[in-house]
Length: 197
Figure 1 (tube, rainbow, N blue to C red):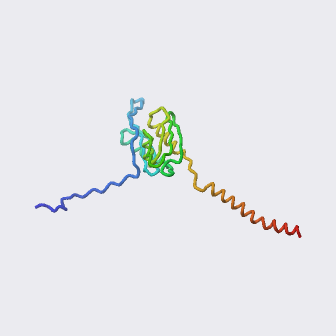
Figure 2 (figure 1 turned 120 degrees about the vertical axis):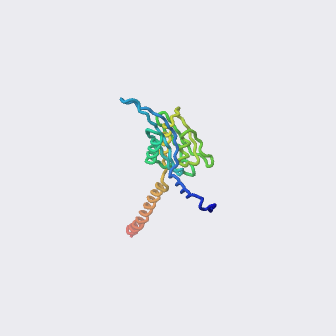
Figure 3 (figure 1 turned 90 degrees about the horizontal axis):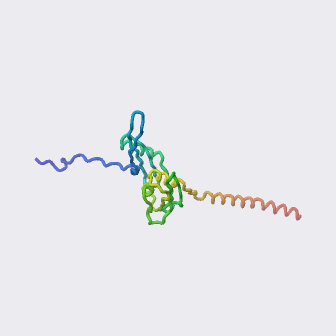
């Protein structure tokens, strides 16, 4: 006898939870270390992670195989994440940073222009969730790791003033001056009246 349709179905798998951060392997290389016992082979991995909402980080680690290197790099990236400030859906102002031969400049861009960048700089900005920005690679190196480090140095060099910090202090000083004058004015008028009498 044919079984009912409902009994044929096997237990459906639980949906996978969405990871907290997106991750992307930017650089993967096989490296060799020469020791007394001979050559030791390992893998060096550079991973970028980000939530596409202002937070981004990178990690560079080595491992005996690719999976171990990636896991170690992701853990390191989570420990060294930075927050990228945004103003009107772009970067606050132009920044410039160098790391060894890498030289990177990041600029704000008007709304709707998207990310005008290439190489790993574009990946970093996408992982950080920057909607509009432009960049220039002024250095003469194509080393991805050095360009990533220069880009992160640039992103950490933004100077964003807190709203109303200086203005509020000025207003407080002005009100104090006015209050002092109003308190002193009546005394001055009384002393002048006594002198006239």
